[in-house]
Length: 240
Length: 242
Image 1 (cartoon, rainbow over the protein chains, first blue to last red):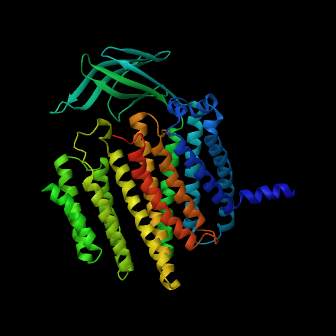
Image 2: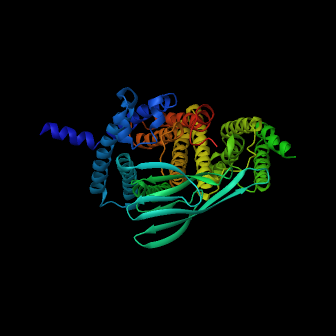
Image 3: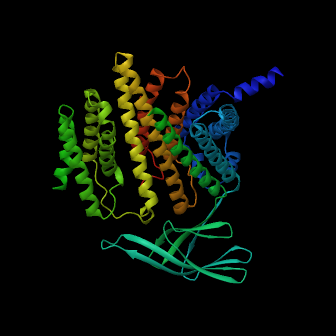
């Protein structure tokens, strides 16, 4: 009983949050120093994070494993503190001041969830393509590069590029285009136009991505911002 | 003419440390320079150390305007702010301006908002650090306590803008590269900065950290800002090198 009470006190404490944040800072600080020189980190953006951790030595990954552990504790701490805060203060006035930090916390937790989902299920592949190139994304999902256009500036720099495409899915045809910052989404994948060359033949570099955490990250970001703006408004009103 | 404008803000800021109207003249010249450069380039001048340092310097002064009433008799505040703006402007002047056409991936509002919000937040964190230094020098509690409160408000708004900048950066990265997160030193340092200020905001709620310790965190945070912005950009290869 005393043991469980100890755990509950640990998870309900703001002091725990502070020390966890400080631990996370030190772990990430080590990682930020180790990363630029480490050969193992060359492949970190090409694999889902958990696969990368499995494939590499613990000497290279310990700070990430440690960060994940600290973030797990921080998640539990955030949940417990948020629930306690709402229960304790619900009857008080200034509800915006009580609710907004919890909205921020939910946003933060959704962003962590996004990273967790992406760390297991993300995928990336690249390929060169020319006008007329066909790809099979999945059975019954076909993708065709119809035409490529590249704009050059007066000094010969490539200023823009675009690829018109056709997507065939289960007998239906859909036309679209790819451009910088303008991906095409089909069958759970995002297709990105990364680079283009005009000579000797028109060619593009395509990247096919699956990022299952993206919707969670977006939802988390929206909640985080809504909570922060509400908190600032409430604090300023309180100070006035 | 552009060279003269780029340089002129430096002595104006420097002597603005002694006579405040020169500080505002320096700000006006810097805003005029950035506007002229933007018109010349046909885009917002936000790429490279030259442009972003000028933008940071102007933002520092711009965000001091709302504090004018509370800080009107705090000569030290304007003295330190002027020196900081002068140092950034001098460094900007010796940095080569980015004159090449923008890579297509940078031609998006997401990028512009991401950068503008980042530098607004850096400026607010800079102001918070200056307020912190004045707090430490202040003798009487009645003089120091309001400074700590203003520092907290400044950090809170800076943190909000910085979070928004990270969210905009994530959306842009997702549209440009297919992922909202890349493991590079710049992203890691940005996260360290964000966690540092999260730490400040939480620590300040506890009595043991309130007052002097949290003020010192507010000062130290700006060192992390400077390393995240200049240190990482100049010393390490990252997704933010264009």
